[in-house]
Each structure stands twice: as C-alpha cells, then as structure tokens.
Length: 592
Figure 1 (cartoon, rainbow, N blue to C red):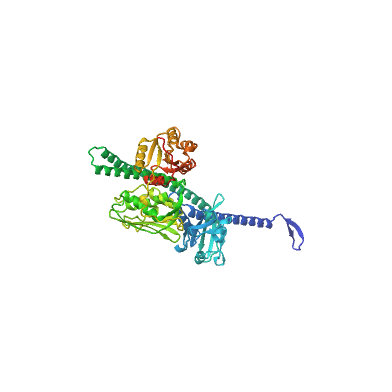
Figure 2: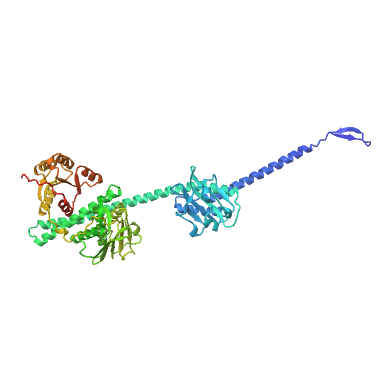
C-alpha cells in the first residue's frame, strides 16, 4: 500500500493499488530464458540435422554393386566433400595384425599413394597413433609433427582421422587432410568418427562378399578345369591305347610281313611307355602336391642326366622330326636321379609338343656360380603373355600346334614341384606367340665328388652277368613277358604265381634275385620276404619289390622288409642295370 498526504505533508490515508516490480522482472527473465532455450534447442537440432545430413552424404552408398576398392574410393570422395578437405585415405591392417598399409586414397599424387610395400607399425606415426586412439585425432599443423611420412608432409598441412573398428577390433584407419593450414573442429572429428564406424562395417561386409565371390569363382574355375582335365585325360589315354590295339591286330594277322610286325612291336612298346609315363606323372603330381614324396639323393652330373634323357627320347623316335642341339659341361648336384630324369624329360617333351616339325630345340647344362643350370630353348609357338604367369599351374594348358588346348596341364607343375624339392627354382620365358620359349632350371651346385669317374665309351658293352632269378607275379601275362625279356638278357628265370608257391620255390632254388609283386593272393609280398629271410639258405638272395604301390610309406615298408623298391611299369634298362650291379651271391647249384 502507498501513503496519501495532504498539502502540509501529513499522512491522511493509504492507497490500495500495488505494483510488484520484482515479479515483473522475474517473469521477463523467465521468458528470456525460455526463448534462449528454445533457440539453443533449435540450433542444436539444426546442428544435429546438419551432422546427420553430412554423415548420410558420406555413408549412404549402395554396397552390393561395389567392389572393395570401389567402395573405399566412393567413401573417400564423399568424406572429402563432407569435410571440405583436399585429400582422404584409408589404411587397412595387414594380415600380421601389426602394421597398416595404404589401401585407397583420393586427392594425393599417384606416385605418392604408397601401397602394399609401405607398412606403418600400429602405434607409430600419424596413422599408427590414430589406430590406437579411442575416437580419432586432429593434427592442425603437420609441419611440427616429427613422425610423419614425406609424402604427407609434402602434400598436406592439416589432418584428422579415426580408427576403423569392427566389434572393438581395429581393421584400419580413415583420414582426411587439407593443403592449407586449418583448425578442424570437434564436430569435424565427431563426423569422421561416425563415418569410421559405418565405413568399418561396410568395408568388412564388402571384404566378406568379395572373398565369397572369389571363392565361388575359384571353385567354378576348379570344377571347369577338372572337367576339362578328365576330358583331356580320356583323349590322352585313348590315343595310345588305340595305337596299341591296332598294332596288336596287325600282329595277329598271319599275312603281316616281318617288317610290319617289327614296326607294330615298336609301336606297342612306344605307346605303352607313353601310357606308363602319363600315369606316373598323374600319381607323382598328386604325391608331390601333398608332400608325400621323398628324394633318394646321390651326387649326379647334370650333363650325364641330360645325355641319358636325350638318348631315351631318340630311342623312342620322339626327336625324329626336330633338330636338337646339345651343349653341356660338368655340373654336379646332390639329387634324385629318377626325379631329375623326369624334369629333363618333361621339359624336352614340352618343347617337342609345342615346336613344329623341322623346328629347333637347344638343351644345355652348365655350372653358373653356385648353381647347376638346365636350359631348354625352342623356336616353337611360344607362350602368350597372358598365359605366362600360369604356365606352371596345375591343369593349366597352353595352345598346341593345331590351336587346340594341349596336354593335361600336369607336366610343368610336376617340373616346378620337383625342382623346388631339390632346393632349386624354374622360370619360363617367352616373347609371345610364334617367338619360341625358354625354360631355365637352377639347382644348388656341389663340388665334383672325389669318387666321380668319367664315363668310358664302352659302358654299354660291359660283360653281362648271368643270374638265377625268381619272378613272383600273379598276372600271367606280365609274368610271361618279364621272363622272356630276362631270358633274352641271358638269365636263368623261374616263376611263381602266388605267395605260398614263391616261398617253396625260393627255398628249393635259392635264387640270387627274387622279383616279388607285393599284392599277391594268399600271403602278400612282405610276408613272402619275411618267410624267405627266416631261412638261412636264402640269406644272400636279393629281394626286389616289383609293385604298383608307389607311395612313400609303401617304399618305406618295402625297405623295412628287406626289399629294393621298383614301381610298375618298371624300365627294363633300369632293371637290367640293377640286376647286373648286384653283388654276386655264393655259388649254389640249382637242384633242378
């Protein structure tokens, strides 16, 4: 209430009108605070909406149609635009889990983008520090950063980045930068952190899709290669079998002249050897690729191995239509003779297959530094540039002279694996179609062994040693054929068709050599060997396993049973030489 006074200043009453000034002030302040709050909320909403739009602009990418590289490039281009930056990059964690490698970038000079050869330890350098940070880092002035790679310092002045994480696991880093100095804000860092969260998931999904796609493509290619291989295998087997059947029919004809019969027999022998070699290669490539093959090493002169292979190919007339030049010098290695022959023969056969008639083939062996080198060159149809990187792949087949796919695609694979088993390497060179090809094998060289003696010219005329031989084989045709061949070589040969008969024959005949098949009816070859060895009168009999079982464990089991191990179909020259070099047993008169 307000006082009322008269003219003299005396209080005569009071007014009932009241103004609460303090209340008005409070209400006005509350209205102002509410307005400010509303404006702040609108500003925050607008800011959040802007951040969401920026985030959507960067991360809203259709994934299924993009490869990993396309996805990362699209993300980086949008991130650069969203942050108004000049460059952006993604670095992914290497398989070792310890390093980052630049994987994709935009706005950086091509030569400075880095690559798989650039590896940044996690926790070191800018990218490494970003990788271990919780939500990312800002570098306003890169000129003062000591641990910075030259290509970043040359191109960027400011940078920010965030780790790419999937379920807490760091898979990489995403970063963006500007050429001119710039102070990135907390909002910028928040944006790249949100982008990193979404990008990491997108990258991981795309990598998974790409891995699955590549796996499907590989499976489809393998299936197609298998089908093509089986079709080609049928072709490769039918051809020699057809020739053998026709030659047999020719021999069965009573009107066939002697010279025609001789040619028919040569055809049968040549084609049968071809089939045997084909089967050997198939089995060997399976054993080699699965690590189930061992080497029987001894000092070998690579030049001698080359000469032996060439002689064998000439004997089978495979070189009749080509000009072959040989250049060799002594080059000793510690190797497996049989496997080295396979290497040389496969490379020579490959050159013959892809070189037209009257073409030239040069084969050479020589020492070169710490290596012994085998080189096979031809002027044939060559190797297309696109096929050259796959020439040693399993089932990979080049184009033959008639432009059809050639061979089974296993010979060169076997060459590479056998060379690697010897600690060497092989490479293929070609300038393309119609420019020939060159295959170079390098094997670790050894010093010339002291016991090495030069071959004499009359090695082939060594005095034959007559042996008493027992053949144990349940296949009557194989048994009869082998007996005939050994008798032609001057040996006394006896037969047994099963395990029980073999033991009886061995105890009665006391043979110097017993050729025993392992897979016999009744008791197998290993049991035959055990029973023979338990009788003192057969202690000096040399046991040779002649078998189709060719695995390393089969060979080991044969050796444990006292056998020398030969795999069917055995090379007659190899068998003859082995028999000739066996120690002579004590003379024992045959009781028959």
